[in-house]
Length: 157
Image (cartoon, rainbow, N blue to C red; front, side, top):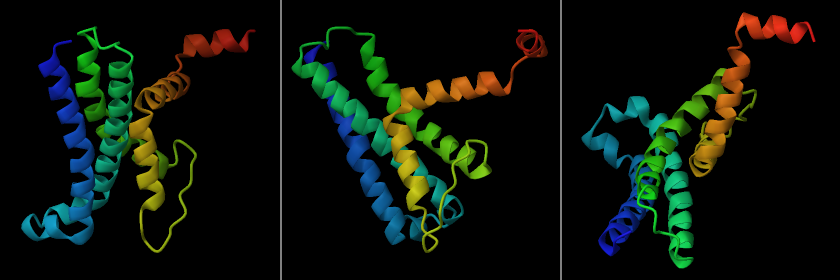
């Protein structure tokens, strides 16, 4: 991987990581709502979104630096992972919290003075463990949407 591409990826991941903290701070203080009043309607989801971005970018910053130190940044196909996985993690974090709040994933959040700390924490962990969560989601999906053919074959065993 060329030096400029490494610098670009490191800059991108760093901006995503620190920028997400900045965005959460701006949401928390109401700065964004003053200039964009519509944000107040989706504020909670934006917390989940940016928490997922922090988790996804932290994980990939760690992986990038680890692979860099080991001299393992030679595969050009991996740069796609460093660019796109943190983006996928943001939306996946929002979906994960939505699935949990709907009761599908059987995790219950305790309200703490009307603050979404637990869902935000889950969104961070989903962002950080994006690959693992998608694997679990795939397993749940396969189990949830089994075809009748598979169900009758399983019942005959």
